[in-house]
Image (cartoon, rainbow, N blue to C red):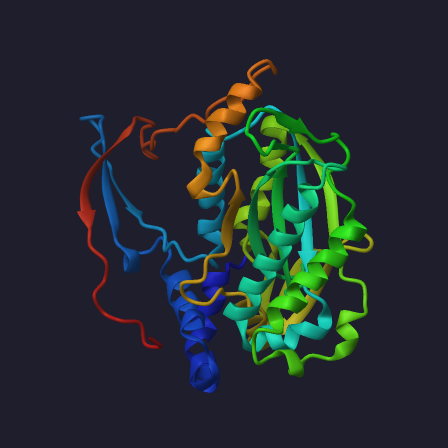
Length: 359
């Protein structure tokens, strides 16, 4: 299996030499971090075997923590799952997806922070407005949104996923208002409000005239589907939170300056393989590295930081519902590869101080 780090290690310096003047700082950072992830470049710790007859020493290097790194994404997903156990409600959950139309993607690519922020703001406002309608939920909902910018074949495709508990808190905070397990809000109406909210926000910028008027007359794609309840829903939703554009197990080979990787077709649901020149592959991947400082995971309603106290109210109102069985994860100790005994954490290993040749 070929890893993304190996592709960057072999071709990153040449790619930067050729395209560096047009690269964002976040793209350079992604290359540097992914190459160094879990190597001496990031520093780490020594672990010593507790068996006095063995005394094996193992180096455990730190992860890079970059939001585009395929090695770090899985770790972050597991930590998110552990955190969500504290806010898990014994109700059904929904996954909603708001997609930016193709006509706006060139504008988004050149103005990422502005358009991505507007995508979050418009979609969240549309969902909250419709949920407050007494014909549907009739109260304040909570939700968590995660920005993705890719298709499965790594083409540019900005969209936001929202994870939404099925129900809301009444305006006076005295009742929990449950949604139907198979229906949250009508997506056709949600699409219309989403488009209007986005148009309203874009008119306040100097980008409005750069967009074709046709985009405001077309249908905007919004999807909503139930994803179950409890731990099953969390496990289903977790990959949407910290997913990266491509994982290492999808990269099949690197040869003759070309990269082959697998993806599942959204139309046929069958796995396909595509091959790209290595620089085209790197370009496709790097366009999904988020701008520096951009918050790509956001919380709204009773899940927002300023209203987390409402969770206690909601849990009290839901106390009559059977508490879902969520088994806490067991943290496995590091095991000695030599004798099988437990490894004990020792001294720190500092990061390398020298910069990479392309920094």
